[in-house]
Each structure stands twice: as structure tokens, then as C-alpha cells.
Length: 108
Image (cartoon, rainbow, N blue to C red; front, side, top):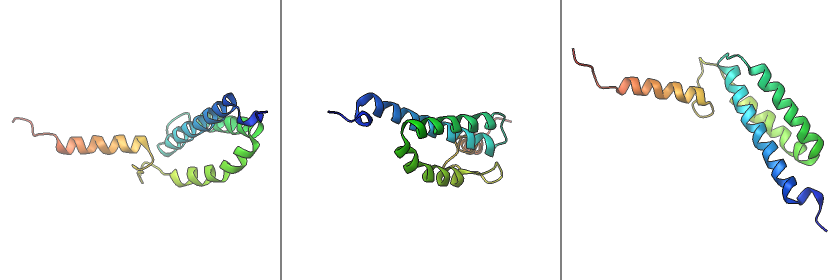
């Protein structure tokens, strides 16, 4: 007999919830760091996804929760202290600066 937690649809749902939580956390931290609207909505969505994980996969939630707290806290930043290693907005801004610096001079 297959344990219900190990069947394919459950594994897929668990993977999707974990991936969705990570996508939401990345977006929420970026929005917060750059003072963009919607960070509060994203953080509420993270909470809802975490509640689903906790209810449906309590062992998974317990195993991941400390890492989420640590990883999310590590990614916090603001626009004055860019984090090109973890923030897509910072990376995009840095690439734009590099492109501007490398642009060929215009004819006078």
C-alpha cells in the first residue's frame, strides 16, 4: 500500500506550494526593499500559502519554516544597499548602469 503522503499528486502539490511560497517571498522582499506598492498583499499571500503547507504537510512546514525565516531575513535590503545577488530589481538597475557606462559616445 502506498502511503498517502508519497503518492505522485501529493508530491506535486507539495512541490507547487513550496515553489509558490518561494516566488511570493522573493517578490515580497523585493517590493519591500524598493518601497513598491503591494508588499503587504504579497506577505499576506505568503502567510496563506504557509498555512496551506502547515495544514496539508505539517512535517514539511516544520522542516522548512526556520530556513524560510533565516533566508527571507538575509535577503532584506533597501535601495540604498543593493543586493544584486538576491534581488532582481537591484540586478536590473545595475545592468542598466553598466549599459549606460558602456554605451558608445554619441556624435557631436
